[in-house]
Image (cartoon, rainbow, N blue to C red; front, top):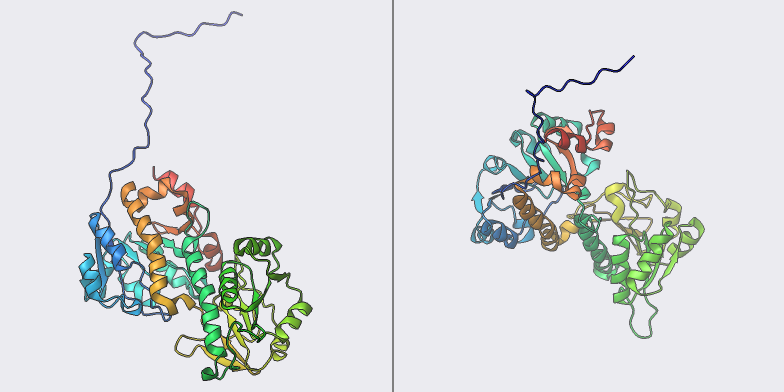
Amino acid sequence: MATSKPIISPSISYETLEETLDIKRQGASLHIGLPKETAYNENRVALIPEAVGVLVNNGHEVIIETTAGEGSKYTDNDFSEAGARIAYDKEEVYKAPILIKSAPVMDDDLPFLQLNQTIISPIHLSVLKKQFIEKMIEKRVTALGFENLKDDSGTYPIVRSMSEIAGSAVMLIAGQYLGSANNGKGVLLGGISGIPPTKVIIIGAGVVGEFATRTALALGASVKVFDNNVYRLKRLQNNLGVRVWTSVIEPKILAKQLKTCEVAVGALTNESGRSPIVVSEEMVMAMRPGSVIIDVSIDRGGCFETSEVTRHEAPTFEKHGVIHYCVPNIPSGFARTASHAISNVLMPLLLDASDEGGIDEMVWHNFNLRHGIYMYKGHLTNFYISQRFDLKYTDLNLLIASRR
């Protein structure tokens, strides 16, 4: 049987369609609000006056609540001269489409949240509550977490800066509490001619551990570093350019070293939850009276069994004759430096967002920014938070693609 030929009607014409390209939007003017923080000994401000000046000169509007920079020793006048508008009513600040906070979203913030607002702040998983997330979902908020914000090198710039501050500060704090004035051992941290150097044990070879080691060596102390990740120990030695004493965390070796040290620093991190406890109460009991423990991991539960959370107002307590310093937010004690570091990351990010036509547009092009977003227009896009609170999870990439 012969196959019939297709009939082509002359009344139908076929034309190729033009290719539609993703055209970059015109630059957008941003309206940014900076509220005053009242939680967690929070002294930092997310944008310093110099950064505000750059944003204002680029055509953006910044409104800041009165005395918001006080904890970092920035006055209303400093911000006003930089071009910011000072608000005496909290509600007025929260009307800004982009809200930037240096502390997490808390109970006090919830009544003021606006529909479709963008919030840039830390998350602090340990204090996160289901009601915060539900209220943000209801308001169709887009939320960006400091901790997960990546840069072009694949690192987390704000976390790294805060870790550098904490690591450097640890030795200054230890030196203070070893002194006689604070009922310490009366030992000078470091070493002088003819006297054996102070012995410092650092548990964790991440950024905090590296900067603590750097500062301790600069002061002349003898430093021993423990970590179960041999790559991190190698990296620390390469970054310092010095062959410091290192070991994996083996309880007997660690206990022996803790017995004779003056300062012990806990700087272990865990990607998904609590820090592991590697120093037992028995190990602490065997330490010398008047020695100092600084547990930087306390914001994730701490890695010394004897650690308990303290505040900047009363930062230490004594247990088994050992001074414990367990303040979770160490960088906030050096608020001006910390504010400058956060501002250095956020100000260029906001300028880029403006060039892209707004944060919504920037999300489409910038994969590093996507990494920091845990809620997009009221859809929860962080799997860990959705599992923890039994809330619906939506993949951010699918959400963005569906809006195009």
